[in-house]
Image (cartoon, rainbow, N blue to C red; front, top):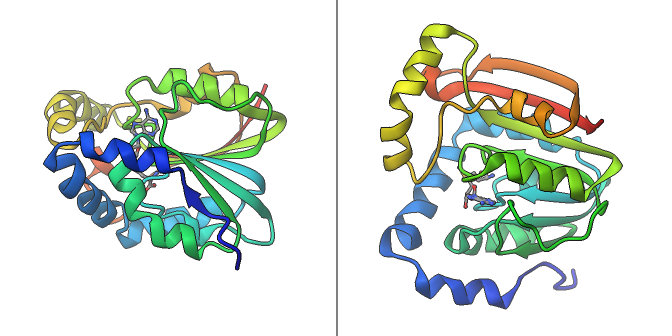
Length: 223
Ligand SMILES: C[S@@+](CC[C@H](N)C(=O)[O-])C[C@H]1O[C@@H](n2cnc3c(N)ncnc32)[C@H](O)[C@@H]1O
């Protein structure tokens, strides 16, 4: 296989500016928690339907890469400011049977042309993007009018008691979990960004506390 899958060298330069926690602890913790089986099952369900030229927000350690259908995907562009996470994705990037390009940038302001992508994949990332609504506006811009947004995210529960606890616990959780939020109403945010839902499910992941495991899962198209 030609070596067409790559991390831009500029990405690796950013790594020296990171603290010990971001460089060594966060990649292992995220890979471990997000790689757990219940999450992997949801990845498998959502990622397999992506097609064409795909943008993945928050590529992280590349946990979704093995689940793309190589017969349907032409190329994956992954964007993530977390350079140590991206470095950990190296082997999965090399093993992918399609081209993978990685940009070490933030989703709120993407250096990408408009109307470029057939699919945008977002798994467990809207919780961590500081301005997720701005990122969604960017997704709307770079997605072709005929394209599809795929999202699989934990977020605000429709159970008032769970939602109350999510709001109470969000600040301490945000502090200890590297900027993750547990109280974002992802489905409403997707709709507010100019998307119409195509398919949509809410459920709580097995073996996971409801405050963390309540899911917003679906696909949406530009309105
Ligand atoms: C919990 S991890 C999930 C990683 C991956 N999407 C997955 O499903 O395993 C959250 C990811 O969001 C990324 N992230 C945080 N802020 C971001 C931003 N502004 N733009 C894009 N990605 C961001 C983090 O670097 C991290 O890789």
